[in-house]
Length: 638
View (cartoon, rainbow, N blue to C red):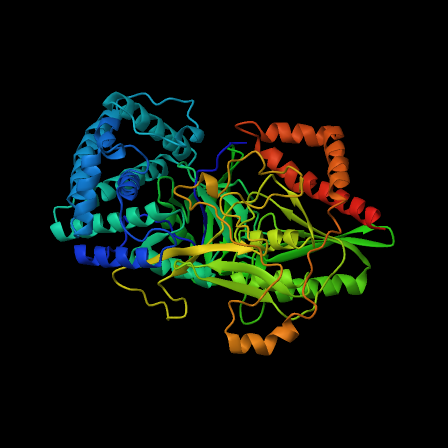
């Protein structure tokens, strides 16, 4: 399997960050200054512009202009990628005064590159296309150094797209697909090369804001009004579509995930790894992913016809009736594994959510209660492997199901102020043997739950060698409750600070380190905050097992102190002496399991066959071994 996951993944309710084809914000240089000042005032680390930051901004600006690296040459960008101190000082001083001439100069380079690209495109018609082109070639690209190398790259991209278009029905349809690719490219180039000074200025300023935001850290971002409107869909988690997760592979859009409960999951025949090449008979090879998404979206109850390729040799027409897609439909699932006179409960929590009807904590509580009403629960495995986070208070509430009372997470804002978030009800939903199963995809709120339960000694954490490592929180200028109204000058989200669990540790960059490493599907992949651009550094605060309520006003502190301190969750040592034994048993089982070892060897390859993923989904050796560890734990606790 590929070592890196660089292709962007998109739910059909998300939006890419490309500017082209959307209405630009009407912003001036003073608007740029004002927005940047607001970002820096709120940001956790960057309070003022600096030369190192400007170096990042220049790199991000080039990435915004030429993300596919098919226009500019290495010699043209080197000056900006490795700027001299004089250039950095010049750009810095200008930015402080609301001037951005360097960015206009870079844009002018791009305009010239557009002309060169047009000339090279005219040469492609007379070049024989190669046959041995792989999507993997286009990951982690750098700028080429010569026109000859650029022409070679364009040739290989054209071959990849032509191979996909060749699978369409007839010559006319194939021609339309290739024409669409050319049309999209020309449209983008026309926008870059616009003679309208106002339009060009708005485009450049939008790119400047995006570059500055991206340079602050991996999660700060600027949105144009059109992007902000689309982002509202993500915040509200609601739209009408089919409910599938896509990846743009240049030669079509591959189904990465089908959302449980969404229209695509209703016995439509659509499968993971199917590649969409047409929507309602309209070829989509060469489309932006947002363009494909818009074709798939539509009114509830109306049909959409997908033309897909399966296993690169079977072409299918699949009709799906559009419906409401809400992430809550894939939030929680459970199963039980018989053991002795009871069961080991396995509950997968896929997100931390809350709406007027449901919440992750309430649903998890009910699921535990349902299983307990039917079985004797000998042990519980809480599976957070696919949980990328969600609402912070729900992370506190979920943790509270397994501890009596105490601090769950602390947040330190951009001013250095620390606020503690506590579970205070003193009740637990389950106090028996507990395992938390994690992966490199477990992030944010999922990391809070895993690390806090580990801190208190309340659970044994099992999984990949670390979790994702997102220990920061963001705030948004757009308000999901504001009737969808968006600032015509754009919106932004900004990283305000870090969070820490009761031990004072933050998972930022390092993730949650499991007590017992059990490798799985994502173990060999380079996934995590440490692989993102410009992540914030890790730090820590003092531990807070003995909560003195210092962040509570004195009057309130005196009123609640006596009641709150009763039945505080102690730091347990129950599992500490058992972990070495559990770890040794697990390592022995994994080493002796030939199927498991073969599976891990295949995952370590650059290009694992798709059937390997299917085999894992069916067998899930990581989960099976976690159940084995839980059974060992139950025995050792007797």
